Each structure stands twice: as structure tokens, then as C-alpha cells.
Amino acid sequence: MLYIGSHVSFTKEKQLLGSVEEALSYNANTFMFYTGAPQNTNRSPINDFLTIEALNKIKESDIDFSKVIVHAPYIINLANKEKIDNYSFSMRFLTEEIERCAQLGIRYLVLHPGSHVGVGVEVGINNIAEALNKVLTTNNQDVMILLETMAGKGSEVGTTFEELKEIIDRVDKKERLGICLDTCHLSDSGYDINNFDQLLDNFDKIIGIEKIKAIHINDSKNPKNAKKDRHENFGFGELGFNNLINIVYNKRLEDIPKILETPYLDHKFAPYKFEIEMIKNKEFDEKLLEKIRNQ
Image (cartoon, rainbow, N blue to C red; front, side, top):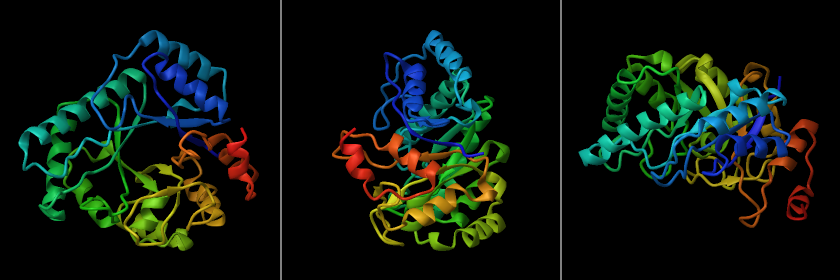
């Protein structure tokens, strides 16, 4: 079955109920959200009444709640501990995000592994694994952390399958770790999206395809190996519609939720309803951007 959705908002006023309503307006059957702004620590208490309303609305819809995902905020960085207060904060804040996921009933939490900021990839990997061991040891919630494949911008860790494998190997509770593929990041880090089945074979040998629990379906503004991480609308970038649609409908990833993080047009027009329709039709619409602007 195709599980397709997008990033949606999670506001103080409506919380999960608002997220569900937005996802339904896009004709999605899954979605992803941040439990607060990704760039800061501002978090409102979870309103259980709104959560119950949201779950009731989901029961009346095609949304599969088991495929819904939370994304951890960008400010968490587990790869560098030269400033020990920042490192401790990141672990503490990640633990709080796990607790919020558990309260909402969300199983999957996507996490950027972090940036080593000059200490080197190997030290960064050790720092990430050490932090995850502490976080997962002190937290027994049924929430799985999905390490996201990164584009290689700056000093990011997790730009290769081998780096992600090293992190997983050094974590005791491996059953609580999975992977979120990002198509833009994969290409920007140097992987060939044109040969996606070969890429999956490689991933399977190194990590194991069963670890893939989510996919961010994004086109890229830049060519392969650009190391820039700039998303483009579905089919309008360097990856192209055919490559992306083949990934969405790849039989080996049939039950994995696919999430759009493509950019708003002119910073104000959400593209997701139209992109999801195009994906379901399996036919590229060259007038899509015009339609989005005229919505």
C-alpha cells in the first residue's frame, strides 16, 4: 500500500488535531510534524483532550496512525561534546522529545545524527553513540529513533551508510534505532539515485533494509555530491520525477511511509496536496507550480 504524506504544522492551539486536519486537507494517509519549532526549545504541554479528538478523527479517515512520524528539532547535536553543557542539553531535550512522542502515541522519531564541528567524524560517531546509549538507557518508552541520512553539509555525521552502521553498532539497544532515508540528502552526499535498487542492495549489505522505517521524498536543487542540502519540489529538481516515483513505488519499500519536505512556493503556498495527487496519478504535471500558486 502507498503511505504518502508531508510535513504538517503542530500549533499550540490545536496540536495533533490541527496536524491531522492539515494532513487530511492534502489527501494524505500519513504525515510528519515537529512537536514545536525545530529551531528552538519552546514547547507547549501536550493537551490530551486534543490528542483524543485527533485520534477519533483519524479513525474516521484513511490515515494510518502507526505510520505517523515526529521529527526531532535541529538544535539537538549529539556529535560534539566539547561544550559539555550543550551536549547534556541535547541529551536531555531528546529525552523530552521521546516522552512527548510517547504521550502522543507516536512510535517513530526522526533525528539528525549531528555535526562534529571540527572534532572529526570518528569522534563524532563515538559522541553520538555515547549519547544514544545514555538516552535509551534512561528511557524505556516504545519510541524508535530514526537516524536520518545526511547530505554532507559542513561537518555533518551520517552522510554514508558506513557511518550510520558504526553508530548503530556502538549502541546497546539496537532494536530502538532505525533509519530515515532522505532522497535529496542521499544524492547530495554522493549516492546515485538513478540506480536506486543497487543503492538499496548496498544499504542492505551494510545496515539491513529492515532498518528503513521512513523516507523523506524530496527532489534536489543541486546535482549529485553537491553537499548542499537544498530541497526542490517533486519532479522539478536534479533527481527528476521518474526517479522519485520509482522510489515511492519500490516494492521493497511498499509499507514504508513516504514524507514530502518539499519547499513552499514563494514561502507561502503549500505544495503537498498537488504533489500527492501527482504521485498518486504517477504522471508528471509540468503546470504543477502554476496550480499551487493559484490555489
